[in-house]
Image (cartoon, rainbow, N blue to C red; front, side):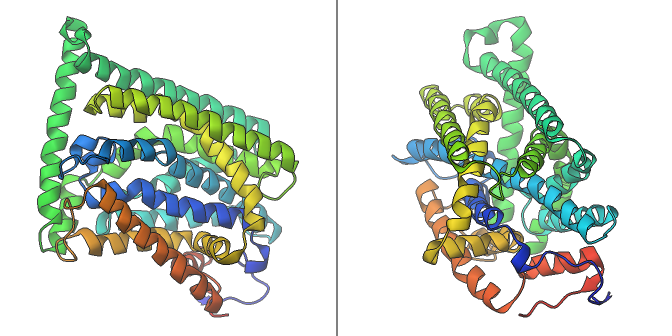
Length: 419
């Protein structure tokens, strides 16, 4: 790498940033931890199914599952994905204005893929960056589409994926939890579902043994040997949701959602309409899952099936409302949430490192030991850490540490990081 002369294309400076995007991204990166905390501290099986916890169910566990299902699950990831799509369009616009090649975005996503794979194998296999990089490379083909085509194509693919998921997991639930399981046509599905659950339970046991051990090398080896290609499997199954949300983000950015070009009263109305209607529908779905006994197939059906539809209005509504509130965010909390959003990349990966030290056997050894309420206490402590360090860091430096490294690698040059 060489030093960056003044006439070369440069990354976005602090004065060019959209406060609405930074604030919304800050809310999303905090919310991502609320969604992931269970998978950090318990086997991955527990992420969707409460029965996967190593600790026994407490008196509040079911209601806390419902609260997370309604308020967090899928919404924060969806919001983060939508923002990523908006960021692709914003980067493309500003790179073009500076005379940069379109391949600069490809190189940027290539480095993101490298970061994601390192995160997956070395820190935590719940990584989302690999999926973003791969879906982002596909989404680049839609950058020049009109807004209506971006939104229409995104909606079509998203709804198709939601219907497909509802049918697939609805069949699994019907085959195992209703009298239909005795029919020959459903018996095979029931058998396959029980075998899948048995396999996941066995992997959860191995995961617990590895995570409560004393060797980081064994932890990395387990990710490589037992889950080497899981990220690729996740891509083939998640792209049908991630890619449409990226296109929604592109289209909403082009429409002016994030820079104040839409009427504030209209944006607020449909934002609240989306949040309220989607939350009510998701609550009804969650209550059904609780009435069903929070079974394995019932919770999987609720999360992977109809919730894909019920959470979409919430994601879009939150994006609209947070874009309105972001430029006005002030005071201690507003400024620190915005700073956390400016450093979302560092905070996302940094959280994985902190959780590694909290839960693994060579750290504080809390894996599998904390029930849901105590996991949320760990989450709150991590939130405070993110809010505490982000703003002071940006008071001395132009970028977060990983944001700076990503920019240097993208442009192939060193940039000044100190103010």
